[in-house]
Length: 352
Ligand code: GLY
Image 1 (cartoon, rainbow, N blue to C red):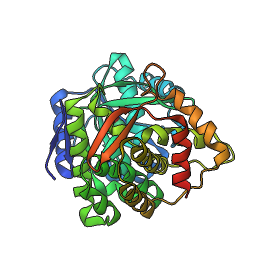
Image 2 (cartoon, rainbow, N blue to C red; image 1 turned 30 degrees about the vertical axis):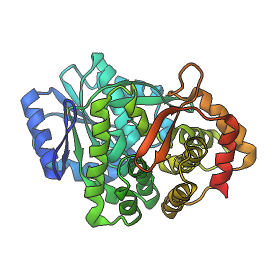
Image 3 (tube, rainbow, N blue to C red; image 1 turned 180 degrees about the vertical axis):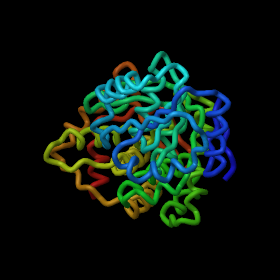
């Protein structure tokens, strides 16, 4: 797969990526390599990663608990304490080996430690490969509010190696497909049929196409002044659903992708109501998404609690919640406002 050039770093695939990592370590004479993992990636991915490292740099592995509930400042403090105790300095390199929690939190930890040390992302989930590890967003949650604390900071390098995906269970793998579907609806409809017929032979190509789309957006608008907001399609309602389920003790939590799948169906419906996107197209989207994601039944008595979480959305400006809506496939409008009563109607449409 061809190298993808981001603003000041590369996204490289497989062996080429590891060669670049080895070259980076020797060129920059790092004092120490910290590898951030969780218990799953330490067990399943670290043994696959370590033979690729050709360097006698001193290595320290830092393990955190797996799961979104640990993506918070307490975990960051624990990691900063550990790096400090292990003699980390400004010439240390942090390598993140894991899913979106590890790459987001690790990038944030690195960019704040001693005002910033270098980091390299090695995403091990599909979601982190096609989204979280690329584009320079780092951060953690604040309570149930996702990614509320964070900074923009670019890694030195991102390495994509789809061999790590074989370590995922089906549900975690599928979670990443929601982001690919987002790119399909907003930029390249051909990805929709690719996702619904995904197999080993087209996997790298799907990942590559997705990253190229994201990278093109980020190159034009790195700090989300306008165009980058398109990457939030499905995420306004999706994040509210995700936060609600995360915080409901009596409900099993949803994966990020499962929540965004709901968000994309609802926001496609809003696109019909607000921008006249054809209802046949919305129905095609719903059918495609539900061929990949199981339907979750949203309880009407939960609608208002879900919608109340919208007021914390990071994308709100002057108290207004903004949506990305579709005029057609591959044609979108940013910063749309929606009447509140349509939001519950969109949940009803999803539930039908
Ligand atoms: N995940 C959306 C973005 O990176 O902007």
